Image 1 (cartoon, rainbow, N blue to C red):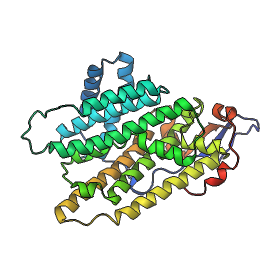
Image 2 (cartoon, helix red, strand yellow):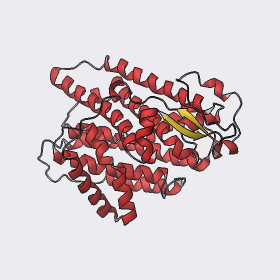
Image 3 (cartoon, helix red, strand yellow):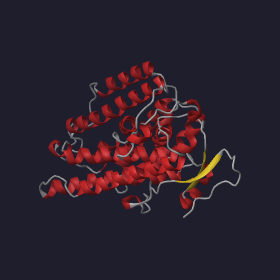
Image 4 (tube, one colour):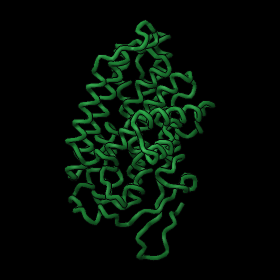
Length: 351
């Protein structure tokens, strides 16, 4: 299908076709929990009270609708656990916004101090309310949780440092940064908690499971960059895969097509990894299956939430999903200011 283009030759904007994100296991409409609204109200109120948010900040939190994201990737867990995951996910996205768009953006010194304080809390002497509750499995779950938080927070710090230094990044460099800081890693322990999974470390640390986690982080980073690019291009945000492609000499449609190939490649790799999961006894195998399904649902939740929210396309989100078309700047501010490195675009053959 031919992509419609603005009639005026000197138009500053161009209609382009976005990569198709609703495919494979992402395509079906998600199941929705009947207690989603109740949980959203409670979680947002809890976090707003806990952080002493202003009325404006509370409205932003509520509009983010991150409880809906949780409801998609843990659709059947008991309400009590759903509520805890919702509280935690709202907090994670709040932190993510601090690093990306908030007070810590471009300030690595304050970000490092903030992260150090978070790790002091994570590593502190925290005693469970009921130490005899076998569901807690406290030590093992805390280790998994800490590994995930360490990867996310260190990735976030590197991301803030990159924004501060404003250096020219290669596609591989920005993909590594995006996958570490995208905010998916802290959700993995929540999948285990929500579904009461007790999978041995030798399985969780296997090449296949770690590979699936990494692929899902990369996928979510790529998905986010596709949907957020229109908002970010006018803000001169360059830590976006589309922007990196453009800075390396690609035209706007070419850049989107390249990222589409990267997304499809990772979806195919996930399918290949599903077929090579570690062999284990029946009980553990069922838990591994539930964990892998949770990862799938997280990736799907990311896409469905992005098009449900007004965060990126405003009131046109449904229209953009239906048509796949969006208008973008031919020459965004960051491109006018940049010097395109010679020969870099030739290195993008490997997606």
